[in-house]
Image 1 (spheres, rainbow, N blue to C red):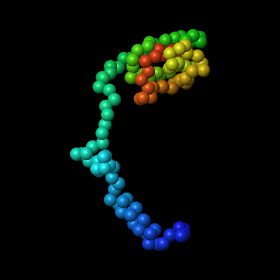
Image 2: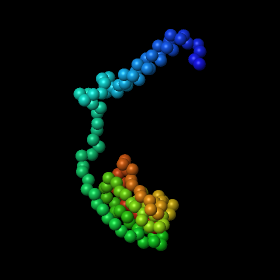
Image 3: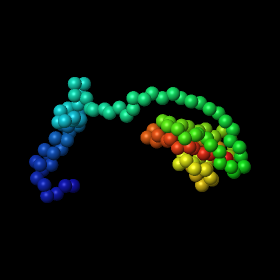
Image 4: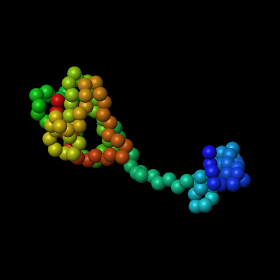
Length: 125
């Protein structure tokens, strides 16, 4: 229960909220409602097209770090672990150890959309 406010004020506020909910909320761009003639501004991040490269390989077991991807500009990558044991990747450019990012048996890892990695990626299994 709301106390200390006249019923007319509370009733008026509730009526305004209900009216807004029934008529829809407006998104403004520069003080004007967004529409087909006044769209929200969009910035294109890159005009560069990308080409997918697929490769398959075998990771040698035994605790020795191996190069998964050489250093180069890339928009992302993904790794699928088809083995029965964990794989570990170092996304920062150095040798991989079992304290790095773990990809468990049967799991899949994909870089986040914002992560444009150009460093060498190493893996250990």
